[in-house]
Amino acid sequence: MITKIAIQGILGSFHHQVVNEYFDANVTIDECLSFDELIDSLKSGKTDQAVMAIENSIAGPIIPNYALIDKNNLHIIGEHYLSIHQNLMALKGQKIEDIKEVHSHPMALLQCMDYLKQFPDIKLVEDKDTAETARRIEKNQLKGIAAIGSKTAAEMYGLEILAPEIQTIKNNMTRFVIINRENHFVPENEINRASIKFELDHKRGSLAAVLNVMSDCKLNLTKIQSLPKIETPWKYSFFVDVTFEKYEDYTKAKSLLQIMAEYFKVLGEYKDTKPLSQS
Amino acid sequence: MITKIAIQGILGSFHHQVVNEYFDANVTIDECLSFDELIDSLKSGKTDQAVMAIENSIAGPIIPNYALIDKNNLHIIGEHYLSIHQNLMALKGQKIEDIKEVHSHPMALLQCMDYLKQFPDIKLVEDKDTAETARRIEKNQLKGIAAIGSKTAAEMYGLEILAPEIQTIKNNMTRFVIINRENHFVPENEINRASIKFELDHKRGSLAAVLNVMSDCKLNLTKIQSLPKIETPWKYSFFVDVTFEKYEDYTKAKSLLQIMAEYFKVLGEYKDTKPLSQS
Image 1 (spheres, chains in turn cyan, yellow):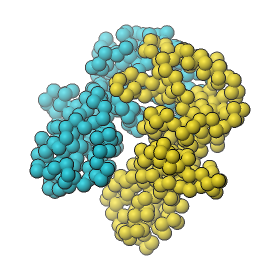
Image 2 (cartoon, each protein chain N blue to C red):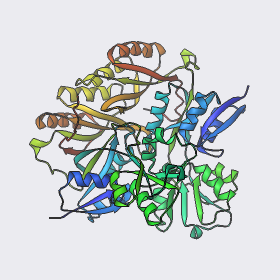
Image 3 (cartoon, helix red, strand yellow):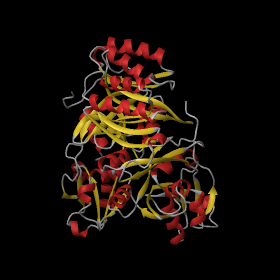
Image 4 (cartoon, rainbow over the protein chains, first blue to last red):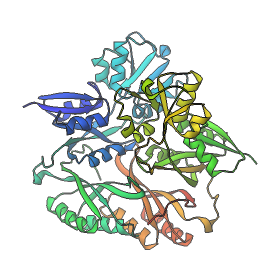
């Protein structure tokens, strides 16, 4: 059976690379030029699943994407970590001296800032997608413009790599989530990670009380962030990721939190695939 | 005495508006086209203070800006809340039917997405700064292009407002911080808010223990976020904002946290100016 998958960006993007590594070969790709488009593709049934960047080891969580999953009542059913390698690329024959502008996604520009600062005369231009820029340079035979992106993008669009591995932090990982309209794609005994959202009344110590319960139930907190409640400025919800060994421990915590929190919601229950040792 | 202030963006930007509301009249403005430039302006001594957006009631914290303050060992010495009103503007005489592209900062585009979705044929182009786009439209007499920005920007650059108040959420506030090379600009008895950063060992319950201490010391937590530790993927620091009534309560908590945390740092101690009632 062919699985239809929505990605942010085009073929050759990091999202595409995640599809290649996470799914088996029987997939078709729907290229979406924004995260909103990606959500529409999944919600409308045009695709079966979507891949969405959710957190970067340098820039932190991609907060609007959490909000999109939440607002559209979608479910996180899996995750994948990708090590990000950025390369400067341009038309074949171009040299770094020929480059007047570098176009790329703001995140990619940020990740390569130390390298780019060596060339104060090169103008940095924010663009929607790393791979799309590479494709445009090739299609329109744009001289003087370089893109930043994956080796795959360079190969796919026939560009030459002027400088490899230009990201400042060599150990740069991005976490992607696999999202779906439905929940429960993972057998209970394999679930060891959950993403939850809750709201608390603003009594002092209410968050501490919730975290105490989680700790008592043997949940490890791997991420927490308070987020403003839309339409209620400066009232906060909390997005929390936890890992656990036993699903029963998690369900126990869940029952308690449902009582303690003003609002409680599960964004996803899935299998932790973190590739690195975590303490 | 004239205070030299660095802002992100140009005259007519929201950062400029904050300067007008927060400082008295004796200021000069250094227009910086990126947050990096803003930091350089302050660090080099070219300016005395800088104004930086740090949190939006819709999109949440602007995480890279926290990291910039932290990495450069700068201090938050004040804060200001601005109610954001976005307007669609173009050259005088242009009608909405004439507009082919809307250029603006990604955050502004996001804030106006519901309005913009009515015009699927209008191309959205991400730009560096809301006011800069307005200035460019005027300077180059660009037809067919609209900007999104403040009323002040429209007036300053002689553009006509095609549609006022186009932000989706009418109650849209952005929090700005005033940053400085030095700390301690506020008398101790006026300090009722602090921004701190700490790192914890990854024992289960360590964050709960810290929050318990804060709660016992009568600190109110107004924001928390875990952030990846650079160069150590998936090890987290915590950025926390607290408010308190008595400075002694805060110093007591601070002494305890310095012992409990692996690393502890104060980003700023200042006066809460939150304009809305908080529970």
